[in-house]
Image (tube, rainbow, N blue to C red; front, side, top):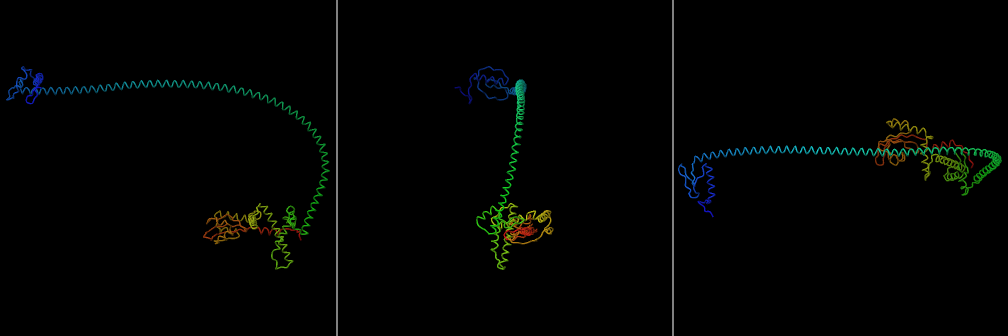
Length: 452
């Protein structure tokens, strides 16, 4: 291992020689002779030149050399910086040039690609155009073939139609000939038939005259017999006052007249029923003779009223209710609404309705009515019996349409409603009632009685 001097590593002769040369180069002297390692280091004293490790040291020269070295170093550094700057500028220029070349190259590649794409698109369009032309040619060929087929079919149809027409004309000629032939044959038959009919009709008319004369005589005889039988039966039943199930059953099919009026015939048993009903009433205040007369008058009146009821029911085509009061109420309403019986009353109530719709007040139109009520307070049951159930559904403050009752027409306005009490204003128009109609009919009635 090399020994150390003053803590420094002892160098080999070759390393020492290299270090000395470096120092000599630094101070600007030539290589000195002598052996390295033979002299020891000595301190430098005073301003004269000293030797260090066999090298003469001159301070001023060292300073000059150091300054020169620094200048050289600065120049070298400046030169190196300039060269480095030039290298960088050159590198930047080369980079830019390379980028420009790359850009040009890319642009050329892009143009080549664009040209290739353009060429490819042109080829594609060309192929499409060729396909389109081919398709058009195919379509034209198909259309030509289709048209040729249609022309062929049309020609065949025309040919068939022409053949049908010729066949139809031939059949028509044949039918006409056949029809003419049948017509001639029919004319001959008709002529022959008419001749036979005239002969037979003449014989039949002769026989019919004889038969009609005999039949008319027989029918007249039968009619006389039936009429005589009917009259005899009626007089027997009425004269002997026969009243049993058999005779009543016969009366259901054959009317036995008791009263004959210009309005119809009263059935005998209906009259008898009314007579029995009248006899059950109390006539103790009069004599027996007067009671018998009143009973007959009452029965006659009831029977005639019943006849009129039946005529009215048939006229209005009503269905009979379960109770007699229901039938009478329905008839009463129909008589009120009959424009032949109550033409004037219906016209008056219509005029009142029109005036009220034209915003006229009740007090202004009450002169057209037969009765007027101003703020009349009624209990609900009395209001319903007077104005019918329509009073319940009428809103407060609203005027009703005409309300038909058994005595005439009401037009009402509801003022208020509190519990069971209803306040109304009304106009009443009197009409010819069922009782008035019956009285009028009875006054103008002509009666022929078979029971007195």
